[in-house]
Length: 150
Image 1 (cartoon, rainbow, N blue to C red):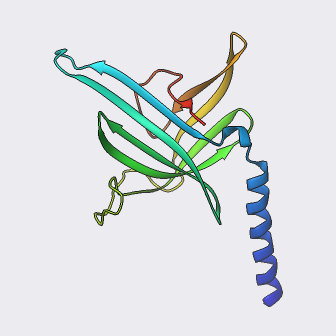
Image 2 (image 1 turned 90 degrees about the horizontal axis):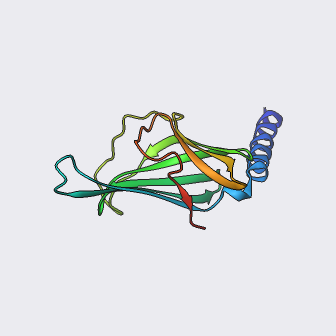
């Protein structure tokens, strides 16, 4: 039994290490997206924004995705990133309180593992462009919404 447990632990450690090594470093950074427009009556401007920030913990990489409108944060999610050279996929882990330190529980319609959205690298006029492909998280944004900041 001890041998079986030892093998399971070693397998987990090697899997985490392999995932960390196989994750393309070119994807790691902070991404921001923003869309501004007027409401239907053209009486109020609106800015929709989102931010992707990478982190690393003992279990591997994670992403904090934050979105809002104007100066209000509306949602905050922890996502699991899965990547290859051309595609970065984000899977739902859990929601977070919108305000740091808040004791209010967060709720979400998403389930753990849901594919929320993807960033896909394409070439256009000799330059690399990152396109956003919305999945469970549905947004009406330009195709090239997110821009890598760092």
